Length: 562
Image (cartoon, rainbow, N blue to C red; front, side, top):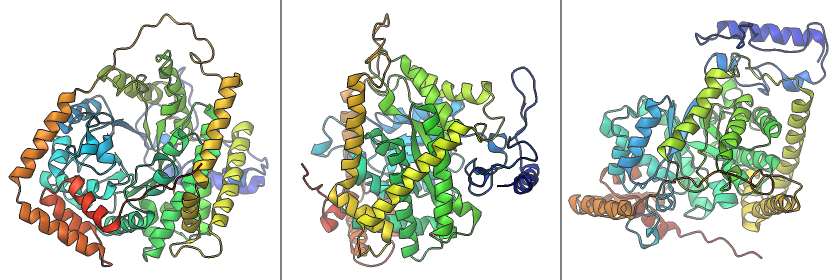
C-alpha cells in the first residue's frame, strides 16, 4: 500500500474515532506521557503489508472491530462459574458482580451437560461437581435470584442440551418480569466441536443441526440482541490441537453455521451478527496474539467474499477468551497465576471482547472463593494498571507479530481447503463446508489430526525440548499443598430431594401433553422452540425433554477407531 492510500485510511479512521464515544479516563503512561489512540507507518512512507493490517474499526479488522479500541469500551470481565446447586452458585455470582465482574458465564455439571436429571442413574456421583446442577426452570430461577437478567449479559457454556436449557433461561426471565426481546447474552450451542473434541452430544448431527437452525430463527425474530451460537475453539485447543488447527477448525465450524442459516432462508446480514466465538488463550504469548488477529481477518474476508455479507456488523468476529486450562499444573500451582496473567494479556492485546481468567487451583478442583478472586483481580490489574487499554492494537506493524499473523492465516486456509475437499462431489444440502465437516467427523479426521498434534507436543515435553516450570524443569519448591474446594455429597442428595418435590407438586398431565406436543412438532417443519418453552413452563425437566427427543431421534454413538 502506498503512502497516499495509508494517509487516506488514517483520515477515515480519525473521522470514525472522533465520532465515537470514548470512556472518561486517563490515556497517558504511568509517567504521565500522553499516547495516541493508534499508531501506524510514519507519515509519507509506503508499507506493502498495510492492506492486510489496516486501521482499527476498518476492513479487514486485523486491528480490531472498533476505531477506539478499548478507549471506547473495555473488554467484559466474564468469570466462568458454577458448582453445587443453584443456590450456592447464585452466591458466587453475586460475589463476582459485587467485585466488579461485568457479566456471568454459567458452568454446568456433567449430568446437565449430557441432558440428564440429577436423579438419573448415570448422574450418580457427578451432581454439582464440575458445574451447577440444573434440572428445571425452577433451578434457573434460583440460579439468577436477585440478578436482573434484563440488565446483565449471561453466557451459558453448553451444547448438546443447549436449546432446552436456553428455554429454561427464558422462562426464568419471564418469571422475573423481563421482556424477552431485551435479553442479551450468549449460548454456546456449538455441536460441531462436540463431535470434534469435547464429546458432549445427544443425537446424530442432523437433529442437532435442526435444533440449532430453529434457535437461530427464533432469536433472529424475537431476541435480536441474544447470540444463539458461540462457536468454540477452546475445547479443540484443550484437546491438544495447535493454534492454527484451533483457529481453522473453529472458523470452519462457523462457516458451517453460516451455511445453516442461509439454508433456512435467513439473511446473512441479519443472523451473522448473532454468531460469536470462544477461543483459548494459551501460554505462547505472540502466537496467541497473532491467532486472534488472523481470526478477525479471515472471518471478515470469507463472510464478504464467500457468503455475500454486505453489512459491516456481519463481517465482525466477536469473541470471548478463556485462559488455557490445559496450561495449568498441579505441581507448584501458584505458578498458574503467572501463566494466567500472560495468557490474559495475550487475549487483550489480541483484541478480545470478553475474558475469563482461570483460577490457580482449577487443575485440582473447582476454585475456592479466594482463588476466584485472584483470577478476577488479574483482569482488573491488567485493565486498570498496565496501560494496555490506551492504544488500539499496540503490536500492529510489529515485524514478528505480522509475520506470525500471516503464517497462521495461511495454515488455516490450507486446512479450509482440506475440509472442503473431504466433502467430495456430493455436498450436503446445507453447504460445502458443512459437508466436509460432517465427513471429517464421520471419518475421524479431526480427532486424528488433534491426536497427532497432542502426541507431537507430548514427545517434545518428554525429551525436554519444551519446558513447563515445576513439571520438567525447576521442580524444587518450598510451597505447601493448597486447600481445595470440595463439593459435599449432600449437594446431590439435596438436589434429588428437591427434584422429587417439584415433580410431585406439578400437574403431570400438563407436562405429558406438552412433551407429546413437542415430539409431534419434531415430525413437522415447524420451529421447536415454542413447544419446548411450553414444556419448560409446565416444569418438565431437562432429562424428560431430552429423553423424549432421544426416543424420537435416537442416540449418537461414536464409531470405534483404532
